[in-house]
Length: 159
Image 1 (cartoon, rainbow, N blue to C red):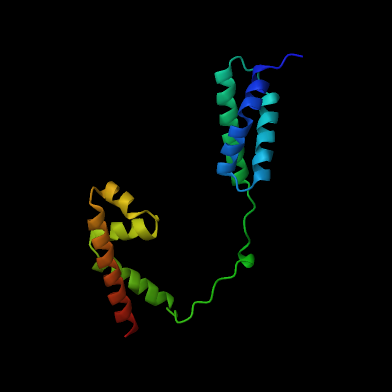
Image 2 (tube, helix red, strand yellow):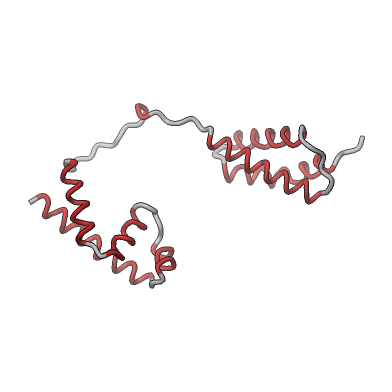
């Protein structure tokens, strides 16, 4: 019995493909299912003539299968979430809007950008320093000043 190119490459790359699927998906079972779906999609498709073509198709189709699985993930119901108790934190919506407005006017444009990159984008100081062509120390100093300004503004709101 003759084994075709696609089958032999799939067998050779099975462990690597499984590792790729695990990097996208959370569980081992999902990764195995993705491998199976990849194999079925390619098996029913066109013929593969070379090993490099087989490898490229296997990786590309596996990637697409994993992305499709992530997109089809079941959404979590809001009712199933329970928010933690926030003791001592009773700011009203108007206070939050006022705090945000005060911060926007009290911070320099560079400080606002650094604040947004840290708090909203989740970037590290090193990444921000590279992005803004600054030293890491300059980013840290600005974040220290930003935190001080936030504390002052918050304390002024509560007085």
